[in-house]
Image 1 (cartoon, rainbow over the protein chains, first blue to last red):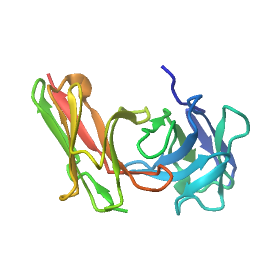
Image 2: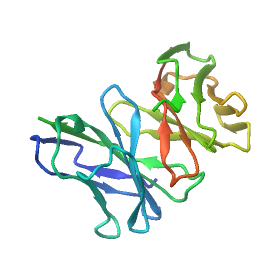
Image 3: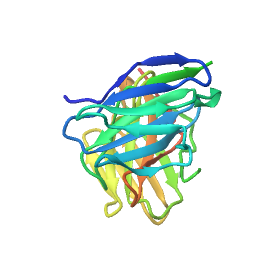
Image 4: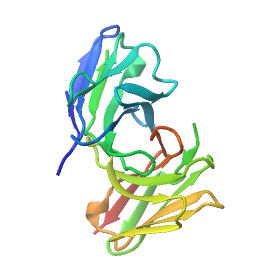
Length: 114
Length: 112
C-alpha cells in the first residue's frame, strides 16, 4: 500500500540553525501539506501546496518557513533559523483531491531545538 | 483556535462494547469531517469521513454521525477491540485548500 515517508525521524539542532525536513508524498497525489504538533497540543496546519506554489498558509508559517518541491517526488519544509518553540512533531501529508479527499499522513519528524 | 473541540480527553471501554467519541465544531463553513487514529510515534491514520450533505457514514465497525444543526459529530466503534486503543482525532475541512482543523484528541482505551 502506498504511503507517505518522512526523513529524518528525529532531528536535533541548535537554536538559530537551519533545518530541512523531507517528505516523499504518495506518487499520484497532487496536494501536499505540512502540519505540526507541539507536545501536548493539537495538530496544527502549517501550509498547503499545489501546482508548485503555496495554496494556503497559517499564521505560524512566517518568513522563517519555506516549502519546496525540488523534484517530482520530494516535498521539503525548511526552517531558516530555528527557535526553541519550533520543537515539535512535523507531519507531512498528501491527498489526491481537494474537498473530500482524505489526507494521508507520514510518520512525522521529531524536531528538537536546543 | 477552538473551532473543533473534543471535550473528552479520554474514554475507557470494555472489549466488545460500543465506543462513542464526540466532537463539536463552531465554524459553519466546514463541509467535510474526518476521523483519524494515531498511535504513539506514528502519524495520524485516516479512519472514516463524512460530507456535510450526509448524516451518517458507515465502514465496517466504524460509523460516523453528523448533526449539522447541533454542529456535532460522533464516531461509533462497535464492537470495540483492544487494538482500537489509540488517540482519536476529529478534523474538519472547509472551502479552503484542504486545510484540516483538528480537535485535541481523545485517548481511547479498550480493556480485554
